Image (cartoon, rainbow, N blue to C red):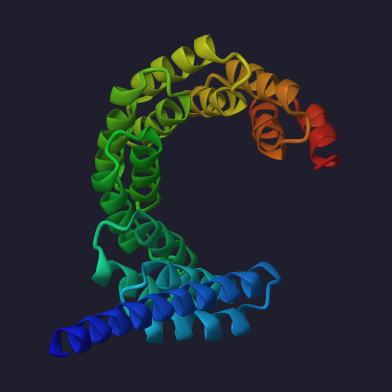
Length: 254
C-alpha cells in the first residue's frame, strides 16, 4: 500500500510539472500573439505570467525585453535581458537585445561590451567582429576597432564591409595611404561599392587634389544618383577649383 501511495505521489508530481510547463508555454505563446499584433502592453502581461510560473524560462525574459524595447522602454528591456542572462550567461539573443537597447540610449561603450560577449559566444561569425568594431569606431576608438575588423577579415579576406570600415579608421588615424590601398582593393572586388569612391574623394580633397576628388565623387553618384553625400562633397571640390557656377548648379538641386 505504501509503495502504491509513493508511486501515485510521484505521478501526481510529474503530472503537475508537465501541466505547469504547458501553462508556461501557453502564456509565452499568448504573449507572442499580442506582440505580433503590436499590443505590447498586453504581451508583457502574458510574458510576466510565464516568468511567474517559471523564472528560468529564458524565452519569456527575451520576449518581454523585446516588447519593452518596442515600447521604447529601453532601461526596462535591459533588466529583462539581464533576467535571461542570469539563467544562462551565454544567451546570444539577450546580449544582442542589450546591444540594440544601449545603442538607442546612445551608450556605445556598454553596447560594445555587449557586442564583445556576442563575439565571444560566436567567434566564427564575421558579422560579430564587424558589429563590435563599428561600436568601437563610433566611440572614436579607432585602434581597437581596427583590431575587430581584422578579426572579421581573418575569417573572410574579401569581407568588403569590414575592409571599408577599417579604411575609415585608417583615415581617422591619418594613414591616408593605407586607407587608399584598402579602398582600391575594395573596388577591385566590387566596382560598384559606392562608399569606397566617396571615401577616396575625401582623401583626395584632404590632400588638395580637388580634380581627383571630383572624379571620385562623380563615380559614387553614377552608381547611386539619389545618394546626396557625394553630391555635397563634389560641390565643395568644385568650389575649391573655382568652378562656382557648377557648384551652384549642384547646390540648388540638393
